[in-house]
Every structure is written in structure tokens, then in C-alpha cells.
Length: 73
Image (tube, rainbow, N blue to C red; front, side, top):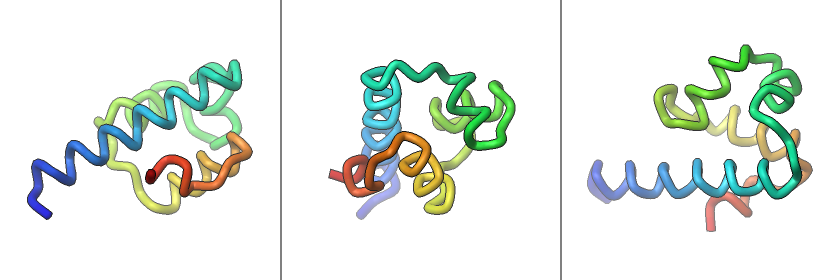
């Protein structure tokens, strides 16, 4: 899988995270607090400015009450 393909897939994962967060009515700030991040720190994750690690993906999924698999479809 080429770098461009990976970047596109990563963008899709981040979009699914945003969609689920909004569906649940959770603000970026509320999720940042749950993850022990600053609002700016979480914003950077959600926008892809900070790379999404597997650890952080699992933390986000747990905070949203879903399986990480739902973001990797």
C-alpha cells in the first residue's frame, strides 16, 4: 500500500471518529478532557496534524464507547 493510499485511509478513519463523536453529542473539548489532552492537542489528532497512534485510537474508541474496529471499516 503506497503512502498516498495510507494517508487517504487515515483521513477516512479520522472522519469516522469525528462523525461518531458528533453523533454522540460530545464536543472536542469534552473528548479531550476524557483523553487527558488539551483541546488543541485533541484538535491536532482529529485533523491529522498529529499522527493517530494505535494507542490513541483505542483510547478514543473507549471514550466513545465503541470498538476501534468501527473506525477501521
